[in-house]
Length: 613
Image 1 (tube, rainbow, N blue to C red):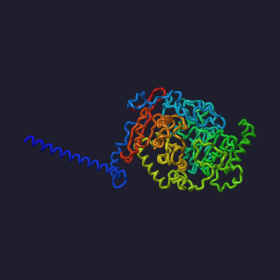
Image 2 (cartoon, rainbow, N blue to C red; image 1 turned 45 degrees about the horizontal axis):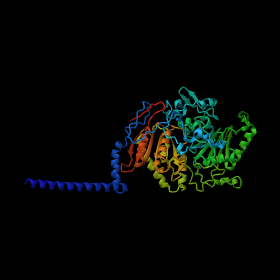
Image 3 (cartoon, helix red, strand yellow; image 1 turned 60 degrees about the horizontal axis):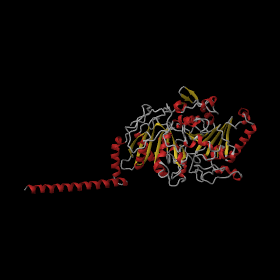
Image 4 (cartoon, rainbow, N blue to C red; image 1 turned 135 degrees about the vertical axis):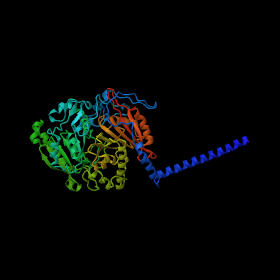
């Protein structure tokens, strides 16, 4: 009997086990089908998933271990990591201001003619520096804007040469532990504001017609700094030369700038990008080389845009003695400039004192006079194909289809850009553009929940490494910040012209090389799909090291990419002294795209640091 009872119990147990297995299998199948349904985008699966995501979002998107505030305290602690994580060594102190593609020692190996030696010359693969660039001892977070316009901590860029060289021109003054920028310049010792007032009496700077500006040979970028209050954003550039750290000072002040020179290579900007271009004693020989430099400005100047030239040779009749050159030399220079301006269909609309202003024609119809001019050679190459391409003495033609007029700013920020309405960019329609805008509103809303300091003024200099149509920058646009929109040279679509038509600024760049800036010049970096784009192109580790170079201590990074890619990135940057957290896509955990947020620890050549590990 006992044996029979035991057998019955065993049979009952096996029946229950079989039933449980069937239930588990059934549930697995149900949830698999539900997941597939949800991913497909049909029915109420999407709504269910979103409701669940919204209910838990407060928990999932908080990043409690990341501190986005500045601290500057504490001794460096050894990073406790997985044994598989490789720790990246720090470079020696002599590399504090290292610029890989504008290295001074390498530059001296190239010809000085036409400023070739000041152009980009990047190291070969075997000569790349693969260590972390240290901040100088005593480095501090820059002052918030607008105080940063006028003051820069001495420790951040400890170079006094400009305070001596430009003492009487009011560029920069050294006061205690800070540099002060009175707003002066070689051509405007009384201040940039008064100088801009003069320009505004001729150019419609105040009404939003002029939004984007180019400053060639910018010095410490005071012109761009003071245009900001008038809602004009200037892209400033200057070479890394004897005027030590001028671009570094500009970026420490919170003003957009890059290291660059007008030499033999086209500027890394699209055609018809800028509403206004400016040269104030920029030392560019505008009348030389068959007018090639004026033709390059013409390429990037929008129809109806303005070119300002102040300083020699303008008004040479009065100033040639003070400039200490023969008057015949200045006379010849100005005559050449006037001649090339006429060839380009630029009309001189003002000359007062040492300031001359020309306006580019609105269209080709108003340039009929140059059709019979034997000097009028037109470019055959695409006007936006510029990366490492030589400048040529040719005129960039007006577009066949314009797509309509630009709105004034800020309306043009979200209006459909002419390049899209004209169908100039294959595969991007008006509907695609509007969908992209809506997508970035959603993404940025999620970013602000993750990092509540995003639009607080904590981050002034922001970079989008893969900008697309500029949706990220347009969504976060504010007078507290600006965004350098980078369109990679390997991107499927050339969208930088659209970025400029929105009233934003940006640049072409290949992330397999170093960016044209000094170390520690960006407060926040956004990398959307960048590492998927560069897969099989070059080393992801080299790109991450370059990001570390240009990111300020305690600056933040937002990566958005496929989860497998982000896992690899997270592993490497842990060894770079970055604190990280992975966050689900705003649509929930079932989406394979994720967000990785990171904060670079504070550390200097002196050994101090902040760390949460």
